[in-house]
Image (cartoon, rainbow, N blue to C red; front, side, top):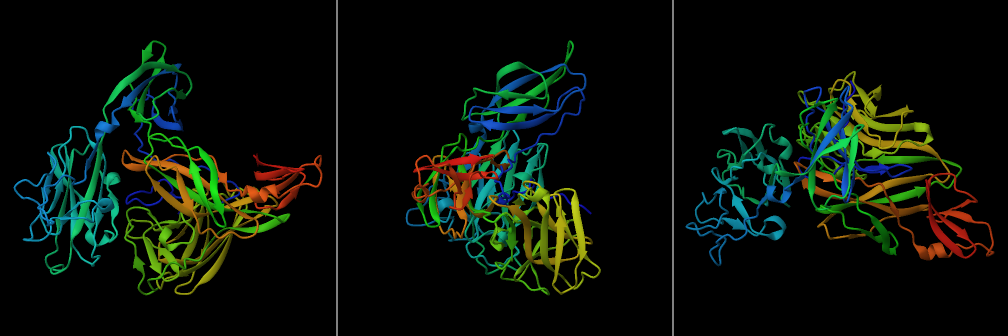
Amino acid sequence: MKKTLLISLLILSGAAIPSLAAGPLLKPMATRGAVDPLAPATNIPGSLGATDFKDDGFTAQWSPVTGAGSYLLNLYKKKVEEAVVYQDFEGLNIIPGTNLLDTSDPGFTDGWTIGYGQSRNKDHVSNLGYEGSTGMIFRNTGEGFETPVFENPICDFSFWAVYPSGEPCLSTLVVTVLVNGEWGALGNFDIERISPEGEIINLSQNLPEGGVNAIQVMFKKNEYYDNGKNLDVIIDHIRLQTYPEGELVKGDIPATGNSYTFTGLEPESDYAFTVRSVKGSDISDESPEKMAVGLSAPVLKEATNIGKGSYTANWCYAPKSEGYQVNSYKVYTVASDWEYVDILHETFDKVTEGTLTNPVGLYNVAYPRALDEYTENPGWMGIATYLVKGMLGSRNYYIINGIIQTPALNLSGDNGRFDVTVTVVGDSDAIDEELVVQAGQTTYQTQPIKPEEPVTLEFTFDCGEEQMLLGFYTRNGFPFYLDEVTVSQELPKGSQVAYLMKETTVKGADNLSAEISGLELGANENPAYRVFSFRDFMGGRVYSLSNSVEHVIDMASVDSLQSDEEDAKAVYYTISGVKVGDKPLAPGIYVRVKGNKSEKIILK
């Protein structure tokens, strides 16, 4: 019955990471990266990974070995720059005044095999490549590309593609891989699924274990159905990474317990570690090498250019980052002694297509998909998702368990008690079916739904936690459609509830600010933001943690808050201007005013 919720499973096609939509406190976002298998031998420690990333170090962790008195670590510096390869189709020999290549010397990079030009007198290249650069056009069977053969296995592979016409078709991109000297099929990617605006297609998580040494992507035209259609696909910005070579920085580092913190490392370098157990005079073999793939969190700076519903978010550079994600929040401060607050409210009104008799599927039966384009609140996710106008639903699909999942919510207030109200419609087959609402990984409740008729169900849970996920699915797997979902809690005066309003991606490690605007703020509300650094590395997009929140305060309005006397007792206000008296009762950001002096304080 219970399903594993999805927060750690996302990322195939550059989708957004799950977000913290609301809660009395803003908490860190999880970091994702590759996971090495534990060593099979019982005397070899299992490398559990790296945590607590700083600019110049990290903490290595491993599983204990029974009877081990101590451990020995080896630290390796990885040659990542040498392992990353790009093919951007720059420097091609294009015949002046045309989009045709000089077929006698097209200018392709050595080691790459490019098939093109099966159609006579049609363009070979386009200026619709990645960020307006030159890209190759593929439109017929036999056109595509093949990477060089690499000695080290490929662990990260992606390319940028655009299908400008967007015409429905049955043609595909066929992906094959070279494993142990033999080519084998990886799968097909439907042309019609490629965005007319362009997108990064990341196939890293599809690569088989055991080592891929070369990859081929070839166009396969469906001659029967697709004749006469404009099937031009432009491909550019091919990026791959092989597993990087390493050099020993320091060996036989003694450690006790099950963790060790490395410090003084080069901020821009990547590292890996291994662990051996020591039992008396016996020393085990090394554990499998574990890459430290995380990033340090950007240090936040105060907002500038503060206006009505707008500000500039600022932060400091984070080593090894390729860009940043800025999460913009609206923070509501409870002004009454107690107040029943909607932590999450979603109507799915952004869904504009599909009917109960003809729902529209999103083809996400293999991997979780972010549903931000269909929801007011960022961070919703789903598997086997279907659209009905004003509703979002799911169903089981063969062996695939369909599920709709909320953003991560902070439901730790009111001792974990919270209410879920959901309006749901079953399809015509949903007879004797029940909706399951699952809170976290272990707790769930069910109530019956009706075929083709909306019902409103109310659930009360007492297991609320920080960063809690709620999942919706049916007991027997029949289709259901959510029409409205509300998650509520009763909270005391001074509690702060944060609602995620925007996620802004900033490309480039040295771009350290973002203009945020269009925030609609009501009474007792103020803006706040967090910033996460990210990089594409080892088969996935890795994000930093972010423990800090910068509340946006208009100091001009703060300075207007004054006590009557210079020696008056300090008075506290929320940052939205609500007076809370002599002493705040709940954690949060406050303005302390004494006489004509005001200052911002943080109560933890």
